[in-house]
Image (cartoon, rainbow, N blue to C red; front, side, top):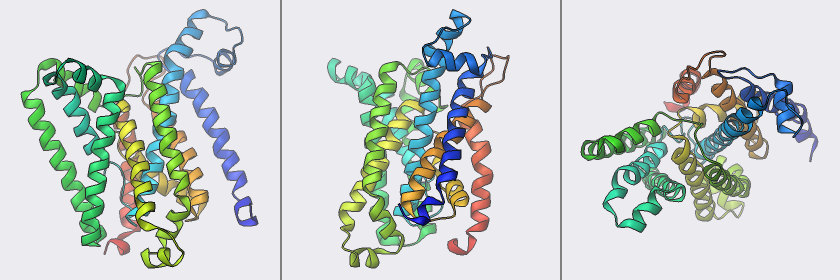
Amino acid sequence: MGNAERRYIPLFMLLLVVLVLFFLLDISLGPLKIPIAEVFRSLTGQTVSKDAWKFIILDYRLPKAITATLVGMGLSVSGLLMQTLFRNPLAGPDVLGLSSGSGLGVAFVIMGAGLLPGVAGLFLLSSYGLILASCLGSFLVLLTLLMVAGKLRDTSATLIVGLMFGSFSSAVVGVLTYFSTAEQLQKYTFWALGNLGNLSRTSITVLATAVCVGLILAVASIKSLNAMLLGENYARSLGQDLRKSRLLVILSTSILAGSITAFAGPIAFIGLAVPHIAKMVFQTSEHRILFWATLLSGGLIMLLCDMLCQFPGSETLLPINAITSIIGAPVVVWLVIRKRKILN
């Protein structure tokens, strides 16, 4: 590690400490407030004052906090990958239609699996079927978008094409909902609102495995991401295999965005806003730094959003998408104003 990288160590340490603190706070807050000391005792296997607290912590709030961390980290890193791949500061899983593509895959599974024969239908409705359909949806959208972007070579036009993919996916989902039953429609509507809770241990294990695979692929593409920032010709002069690098980034982004959308629903703005927050704090475009900064910032901000969803002492719980939009929309407005020269 060089001197340039060492100056970021205090910032990374601070992010890590705040992430752990937010993780404990997220478990502590809720309709029933539990002291952080009791949360710590429960997580470390020590005796807790009330058995009910231990039950609530381990069976409900710990899985939700783990899901929030995974979702925040995965979506943020996928946003960073897309912004570098398209060399577009406004790229993100929700802006370029990846979330819509994942949603379309999930909609086909939820509202169309009943039409398939027994075993195939049961497989598609399982955790593995949902994640496969969602990843496939985001993969196809990203692959098509990349082909179109290669011909357009214009950032604004690429964004418009991404928005059109989103509109097209929404239209197909609309047609599917028209022909679906009330039960299927209710299931899809609850999924579309976004939810970090209600995941079984098996689902969290599948989600964690998929996110880890996506992050490992992202780490493997860090060197090529730095070269992509400087343009295709420069990347080729460095000996980078651009086709292989792009495929690696597409696979990583599709797995991250697809698996998270399958289990947590379409979460807006995190993938778009967090990479810019990390760049603003760390003041660097070096992806060896940005990757870890975005990863930690994503987990931290998603935990913050989850805490803001809850009203202490009340059973009211706001949809997670409402909170991420309230935090993310001002960031996007600031970004559009700041980057207006690039867009022009």
